[in-house]
Structures are given as structure tokens and as C-alpha cells.
Length: 333
Image (cartoon, rainbow, N blue to C red):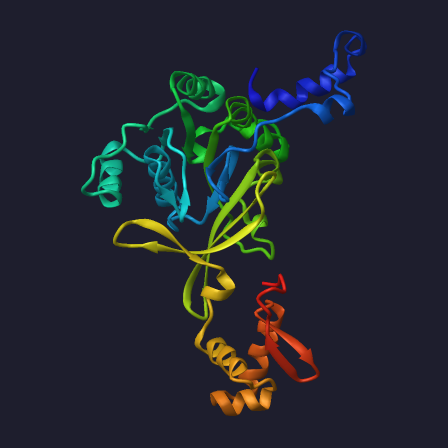
């Protein structure tokens, strides 16, 4: 039965008179649950990518595939990804928008001298999930002594063909099988996907498609860029069921063709004007007038920047017309 008919079959079962007599729920009591012990969540990249299904999104040509390859190398070698140490294990990378020549060229740029890990395996052709692709992935997992990560690049190349008019239902069903595999085998599955062209107030609302995709995933990670005070600013956003939400400033290393962690975006992406204001506050200037004299900034620029810095919790307002730095132990920022 194709995945996109799953919800229709559930609806049909619920309407059948005999369903209430033949179907049985697997019940457990709160008391039983209280005494049950579960193993801790395993991390593919601690603090960033947990076990389970992760949707990894970003604009075309921003560098999602470079980041996915970097993660694949880190896991296959037991190395680091964005500063996080990864446990070593087998990795399957479905590079379904590439060919072997292009992959070889990319890997030569990532690791030009040392040998490449045997635990990292690729496929440039695969069936769609509902046409045998899911079974092939599961067979690979079972065949490995220590499977850790499967990367599908991209969702469009593996997802079942949409059926019907319900986008949410089709999107949810597209990831349901991968979610089951990740949960049952306790591995990480990273699905590379795109974001819409239009921006949104909430970065997670930019994911292309319906909320069925983010609803089916255990975690959503988004690579987003914007032109800011310091130029092109790239931030890695993440949230999920088993991870604490994060925002990390990152930068693509053109020489090594790998992404690197920079720190907190509010600290890293600070333009010259904000740096001058922070220095003035450190030097004891706490009013706009004193800050202007200390920095040489105009009144309008000072007032506008102070307001924005307060909104971003980079500084705090201590009274009428008075500002100060945020204490390190305040928990703000």
C-alpha cells in the first residue's frame, strides 16, 4: 500500500463497524510507564543532530550539501562537525542530485591528502521510498555492524509522488517511513530540503511545503543567510523534540570547503556602530549624549542603534535615557 494512502486507510478502518471489535490498542498504564527505563538519546553530532529524523533546509546554492558531506565525514571518521565531536559509525549518503565525478571532485576539496573513510558509502541512484527505496535503506542498516547516519540529498529525489489534494497528508506520509526506520534502529536520518524564496518572521515557516514535513521530523535545522551590518551573515537554526533550540553563527571556509562554528550570532554579527557603543558603555558612558561624544556618532544613529540593541538583548535599559551592558550572569542573550 503506497504511503500516501495511509491516512485514508486509517479513516476507512475507523468507519468500519467491525473495527471496534477487531482492532486492539496496545495499552500501558501510567504506573508501568513510571518504572520503565529508556536509554538516553544518542547524538549524531552532540547538541546539533540527534538520533531520529532531521529535516535540514536552506536556500539553493547556500552550501547545504557541503554541510551534509562535512557531517558524513565527521561521523565516518569519528571527527568533528561544527566543533561537536561525533561517535564513529557507518554512513550512507544518497547523493541523488550528483554523479561520481562531481562527488570525487567535492571530496578532493574536503580532504585532498588523507585517505577517505571506508565507513562512508554513497549511492547516486535510488528508488523512491514507496517503490523499494525504504526497503533498500533498511537492508543497508541491518547489514552494517554500527550504522549511525543516513543522508538523503534531497527530499525531492526520494519522496513518494504526491497523490490527492491534501498537501499536509502527503508531506507527512513522505517522511513517515524514514521516521520509523530512524526510531526502530536508533540511527540518524538527515533529509536535505529547500526553503521558500519568500522570507518569514519565523525562520521555520520558510520550509518549502506544508507543516506536515516539520511535523513528521524529530528535528528541523535551517541554514539561513542575510545581508547584515557585517556583510553576508549565515546562521544555523535548530529545534526539535529532543534538542534545545539553538542559533549558531557559521561561516563557509572556502579553502577547506567546510563549515565552521563562529559563536552566538548576536555577538559575532556586530557592526562597527554597535562595537563603538559597547566600548562606550564599557568606558562608563551610559546616556545617548555621552555615547555620542565618546564615539563621534550622530544622534539619530546612536538612538536607532541603542533601540535595536535593547530589542536584541545585547544591552539593557537601566532607566530613562540610560543604558548599560547586560550582566554575564543575567541569563539574557
